[in-house]
Amino acid sequence: MPSFPASYCTVSLMYVLNPRIGSITTIDSEHISIGIGMAEAEMNGKLAKRYDLPFSVDIPFLSAISANLASYYILRRQVTKEKSNKSDWVDSFKVMADEMLKQIVENQVELLTASNAVVARTVGQEAWSNTMDYQPTMFEGDPSEWVVDPDKIQDERDARD
Image 1 (cartoon, rainbow, N blue to C red):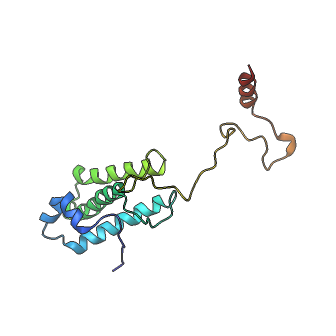
Image 2 (image 1 turned 60 degrees about the horizontal axis):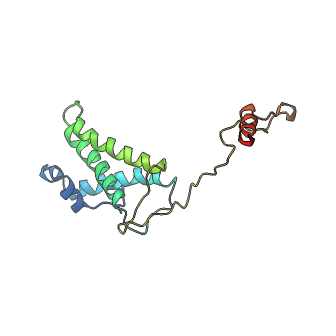
Image 3 (image 1 turned 90 degrees about the vertical axis):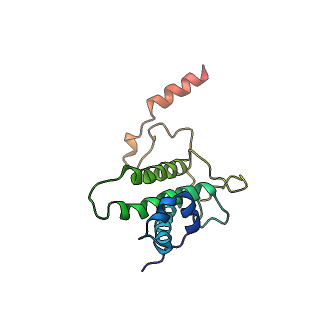
């Protein structure tokens, strides 16, 4: 069986945050550990775009995301195991987690440590320029076809006025 290391969430936290998981007799701590590991593998794949991993501090927001994703992975196998129907309740865990991860990856929220310090983005920094909204003047093609974007010229004229 593959190993899924976990660092954001624990089995005991899962029992506290989602007591229904503990009430399902076919789910034990090993199933929960695997669900957490699968969730965190998905999360790390997305977080690696912006941060050096693994984190050396606790980040509560990531614990919440991990718990939601793990709940989805665990319950998806149980709720729809015998029926082909979908469960909106189970799917809501995935939707919440995906939205939170999207906010992180798209720089809409900062990651904070348990002591409310901002976690620095150390990889995947994007380069920004004041001409990024214009067509590039030069490209790999024939230099005789290089043209300055007319919008850029007009914006520079407007800025002088």
